[in-house]
Image (cartoon, rainbow, N blue to C red; front, side, top):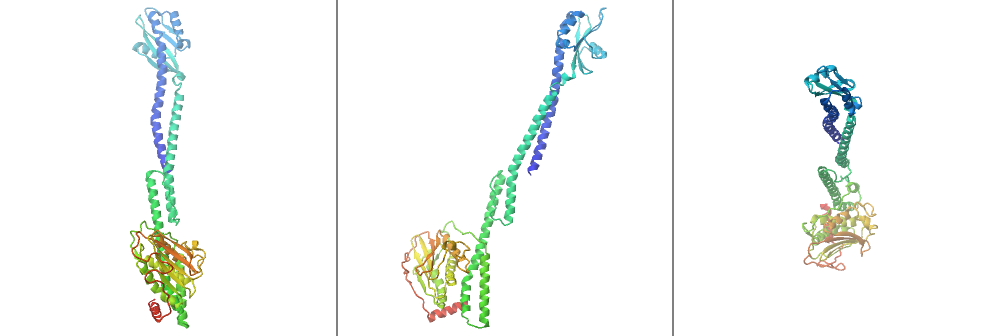
Length: 478
């Protein structure tokens, strides 16, 4: 495209220069010719008064030598015979005799070609009734003097104009082609999987608009791929909850070939889920512009429901469970499925990464501007809390994908909150989910204190027949 534009401008500029330079060169040549012959006519006219007064040879010679052409030997005077007076020829005659007689007869000036140049024949009427002819010789060099220089100047100016137009066209083409080439390279890079490829918004307005549209499209593609990766990872991680129940149920089947095959199948399924989570794309956190537009849920009701589910499994593993702060409704600007997924992810991590018999607790603290959900355990804790919050990082726990904490973190960040990891009063890890609220919640047990809050308070779960029956129902439904 760049060279095509240069070629077009080159052709147009050459045609324009030729269209103006050729006529102008001919005009220069004609002006030089007219200037020389006008000067010759002026030289010949100076002899007219002398011829009108006398035809004496001596006086005519002096008059001829007084002119520049006469002194240079380029002027001749031809007077035909009249009234018995002989003809007079002064100077060197170069024009043909027939041309001179024609001028005498016609009485009009003419220019004749002679060897080495031209001869201007100027007629002058005498008082004797005859016509004298003054001949002025004009060399060829005088006719063309300065024409070649003028033509060279015109050619130089024309070449300069052509070169200038080519340089301007090249600049313009580069300014147009470079952004277009960058746009093509970025499109190719994006097609090859380099999702960070972007185009600088420069060049003509049309290419700037194309760059803006391409960058917006690339951002949208990245967002779609991120959402796809998050969905795959989150869906896979949510399988951990029923998979944990299945693994625990398989462990209680006892000995025998069927039990062993069941445990192998569960282990294989668990490895496949781990592989699926590990192969999910790394995704950026999703954020919402406002929490007021999100349909919220009652976190107390969610905690009660999920703890009813997990407490049966905790009883099977001799785990002591404590729940606090869920006696009154606590509204949060988070969709119920998202909150269920976050809580299940954290509780599943407790069962997966702590030994049987390890106690854990869930506390809900209701503050005027936030709701805090604490999930703590008495396990070994998390060695590197900062890296554990990074998506896909296990924080040093073997067999962990690190996506459980990421699910909780994205839920918290969607409300303007965050997730922090610390050391719990039980001695293990403490996951704090800080959830922002748009308005101060009505009712509720305030912040709670020391694990007491609401009507439910702190409770310990023993191994009762009622718990055993509910655990059996969960196992059978799973």
